[in-house]
Image (tube, rainbow, N blue to C red; front, top):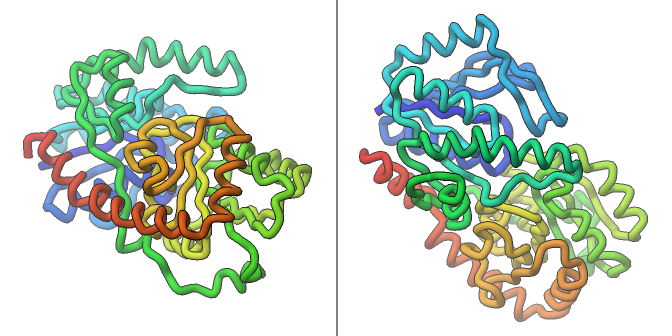
Length: 374
């Protein structure tokens, strides 16, 4: 079997969508399947490289909204590459998330070459943005091109149940859940002297956020919730256009914090190993990779009840779910967990067991292959 994946970003990017596509591709290659990836080159990377058996082709693009959104440059070089790839007789084209231009390009490629389109959806709501014009244009795209992608797809996969409900709302004939997962060999509790390196004393509790530093991830709510709480160190892992605003807010709210920037998966696993409470205050999610990773390490979790998060967290059983944008509720539950060691230990034990049982890659890869009929 031969497949080609179209995605805006891919390795070495480390977002949730990119990690899902990468981990799935790696495991498909191990099963003897040929996997090619066409992605956009907005960071002066190699036009072509092999990584873990995956052939990665990168085409030139324009960046819009920083590096949040990219549009392909349909020059002669890009057209020649697409014509070359069309000769590979792919069994299907796999696109990821309808609102990226890579999905539009993948749909056009599939239609032109009469190849079945398998679309994987990671979103479950219309795009939210502080600029109402951008939000309106994103909605307009969803109601036209996004809807067309869903309707023209041979089959649609959602990384969570809400993703599938959203896909059907926009015209998908049917949708099958193939969960995002976590590498439990990589994400596990590790012995580390990182506390010492970061100069965090034993009496200080560590609260960690991991994700893109954009407004929609809600880290500003976490900072507000931690205002003036003593003996707590906030670790913010990730980069993005909202970073300077968060740093200013942390200073204003008197929150003891470290902004660590982007980190490798190995480094994130080490950071999670010294974390007392993990918080994901996001306003929307498909199935959050960061929550899966924290759970795999056995970190007690507080997360907003958005998207498929409640497929991971059973409220007050293996973690706590809160309403998005509710700073008061978030603060109340952070204080409760900080002061209740027994609850932290119970949540840690229960989430660890659930992640390893339900969210392992072997299950999802087998389900993916079942969807494709292979």
